[in-house]
Length: 393
View 1 (cartoon, rainbow, N blue to C red):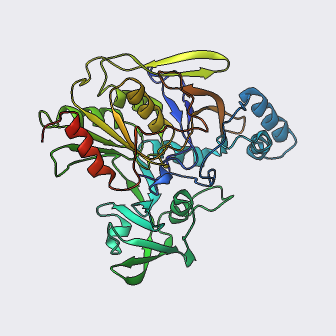
View 2: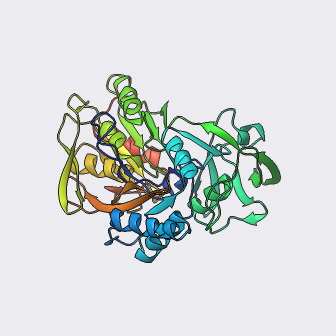
View 3: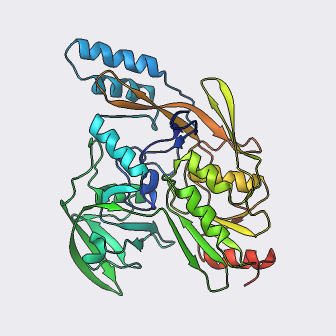
């Protein structure tokens, strides 16, 4: 997915077996590069400003309770509080929406099964087509240029917004379109344009894909941090050929579960600090597990769609001297959201703090600057870097 993981940048809680399930998300989440998650309307700007605001879950819940007592909608009242705060990352979900949000964190979503990126010449190129998914059945292939969605030109639109259109989201909509609904894609291939009608479906998509690059390196692409992603990354690194370098591709990764990003970091680190974060005025730390591969050369690929938990992982490997980062500056979302259940069963995901890299760098509104800035041929450059680091082919 390079598109839109459910908006969830925040500590999910300390339950579920004592595991800290933090989630750093933005409503574009995985949607930055694919059409995976629900609700994309929150982020339209190319770069967020630092979010100084944090929201009091108790105050939001009380506002919802007062509205319910008057016979009004508690979710609407909570949303008004969130809107007045100016915090772009907090959001309110009704019970059904939150259930869909949870399913997206398990890698299940409604969409057409594609990922996309903006090319250097400004075109929107399809980079991934899910095998057996609606887009593939309609004849869409990787490398196709997406020109329009439902007759609307996508020229100049943020990738996140286009992915939301494919899912059936629209600014201000409370939920995505249902499975079975149709969307018209205007595509171009080798100079030939076509219009394809695609019916959205409920999809299960793996968040990690593995391939071998021509020079002998192993590419591990992570589209979002859903449940199980960390173990998948560790397995991919462990099973790589001896001496092969790793290209960890986080381009278009909109974030997800921070606990999974920490597990992924553990594939390359033998313990030690991954990030610190503030929550309600208190400082906390996240540590990698011991036993990771600390010898294999690593290059991390990033771009403007690399967000949140993906930035946390990038910053950890960069600060710890464990990887060379190649690409363009990342998005800059370092805020933390935490769920608050409201009296009517709806859920408010509210910003409660911000995280920093092991060297103390703030990410929110700043992003991470690569060690090697590259807008094109990033994989080739990554292989060159790996060769310089002594990775065998």
